[in-house]
Image (cartoon, rainbow over the protein chains, first blue to last red):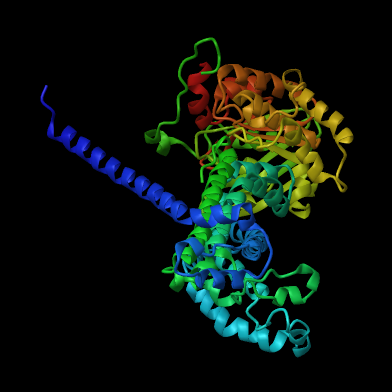
Length: 326
Length: 296
């Protein structure tokens, strides 16, 4: 039987779309393999101590950059603990603060805000979520960093640690504030969508049992939307981990591990996560062992974001059995 | 529909006949006075729990309920019947002030609970005493136990312990006729139950706060005939404990479970009386048109 023109064009569309999506998959896999391959020498020379501590990581990076020309004598020694610690610290603290703020904000927007406020706030939140991170970085470095450096850190405090680290204002505190500011809008948008998706029947049912609006929100609506809150946290964490340029601007870019035992000074100590390290050292990639070390950091970021997106998918699953789709 | 014996189809009011229909207050059958007498206080020896007095509700400029007066008495099931959009659900939701959730709703007239205006009560207190079951079963995404305990927890001043809750939960589930089926699996998710069980769970949840009045908004319309039968038996049993107001568009159901029937049309109360009287000897012409096809 001859095929109709419609069936043929459908088949053609199916094939070309299938080819396109396979191409994307192939490209992503190739990219991962490429990064891993490039990164391998750095990992294999250091072993698990790649993540360990010992020495000054910035000095180690400099030594790798100044490796002799003879490949047999290339230096690979690096202990990235301060950078790993900075990445984890910044991400966990920002996402932790962000979760509380964004849940409260989303509850307010969805349930308690007057309609006029709702109409303005919802699009503004989405707009904020789309602001390029470099703009946050610019505001941080032009406004917040000088303010903190000039007004919040006393000369005495600067003097007390002067032989260990310079306190310029670019610090853990500023980085956390700006990073939280950057990731909160997307979290608010996701959580607000989830709160809106909670069936009205549950809210009405709880109200009809004599619970007040605030209690209904916490006991039924937010409770139901918990997986979405986790998903929002995962997406925010992925953004925070991958944020390079903004953090390179405001974090102080020193391979230093801020010590919570330092008290208030802890907040003013500089640090530098993986992504910012990559941004800062991009010009040195032509030195082969240095480039491979930077690729190793990229591999860690790739792995982390892969794990996070997997986690986010799993976190959303429990909602589906209640028929709620996000 | 839900009855095993075949019945003639329900005859709805034909819009083309609407102009002929007269206002009940100027009705040739003289129904207005008789109905006014039937809804007046003291027309029954039973204790009156709620009284709806000259209640009108409008959504914006669109009236939904017009000048309705109705008593809700203890030990009785009041069935509200009428075609879609006649205001019966709005009337029901106004009894526990759920209409307030709609911003545009404006109400005049008064509703009292044991002589006290319901707007003088806290909405949360009112809703504990006037509980509600919805058209769609809406158990929360929690365990069976947590669902029933929800109302008790929400009204307790201090957080009650599980051992205080357990007998209350059991009692509510027994009242709703669900204990035998779920008593061993109280920690199972409520949403795994069948539709009929979910609706009985919602009834148990509403009973857990020991309400004075139970409102039911077409509680069987999303259920199969077997579940409907179980819930109707349940309603008949529960009326000894609590005053029940049930909205239904199923006339046979109103006939089976109702003690008194109120027929609403276009927001007005057209007919009120005992089941026998409304179905067998309707006073208003519109009631005759509406129920005429069912048992005639």
